[in-house]
Image (cartoon, rainbow, N blue to C red):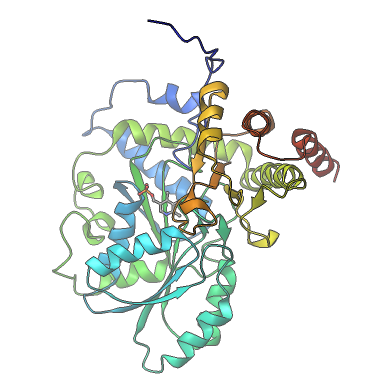
Length: 411
Ligand SMILES: *Cc1c(COP(=O)(O)O)cnc(C)c1O
């Protein structure tokens, strides 16, 4: 048998540039590498409360944090079952795949969904929310649900204007925001922006393995949860009441606490706090700008690469979706993984034939534990992948990214 020898250069530290799970810092891994503390002891109680406080501070709210042993889907569902009853009407804003996925859960729970769907190329227009709510004279719509960043399209909504739209319509619907992709990357100001419920999870900007889901509720929602005759229909596991008012510590988790994940999460929170919230947001902004300037340059010849979101103010600082109309990107992505040790994200939810059913789409995750040399490595191997696979492009994208960074630092 003839042995085919193919040089493989990917030995070394692998880099995940998919939009979550993100790269886990060594500090987090090391913190987790210890025996589980006694779940009946003081230490785990202290760690849990520190994690709750850290998440709360990062969200900028005076409300409360509920922690689930779950991924994002778990907290999507937890939020729906705690706030709504079968038949309740909600307005679901969709600017990509994830809004629709949330909608599938809502439909299974027999909620009555009105969709505000703007497709995959832009953010939601708050004026549309206002006009829908104005027409709802009887205030049947109980909640306005939206993603902050939709991770498939990489479009970002201006959440502050959503609350303004609800207020202008003189409506009392709750504002519920899925910030799973962008929490810990992109500025979020829960109380100042009027968010009632904020949802996130551990594995993206929070730099910890998947397994912790968070519902962050403001004071008003907490008060309602505690004062309403407790909805009997909520399953004991998902219900907020006993998690908010535990008689015993274990009720916070409805069972054994996720010890190692909490320890890891606390270390990640410590890292975010050491860096400082504003600096975390600024770093992600600069790293995103490096990605965008590079892609725009690469696509300036042959018109092969394009940023999915044209309007810069609607672009996410956590993930960037790129497409190359008519080019199948599968092989290039595989080459980049095999030779470069970098995993790029696949296109999610794109179905059009000009984008080859999503094969012409890829995503670059730039969330969490990331600095210029890491993102430059991603961009550099991307450019090599384009060359190797003969996808037309303007070379020199990395230099453009570097220049962007230098310009931003000088400011
Ligand atoms: C990743 C993600 C989810 C889903 O989270 P899972 O942990 O995969 O369940 C939901 N919404 C957004 C915006 C996301 O980025």
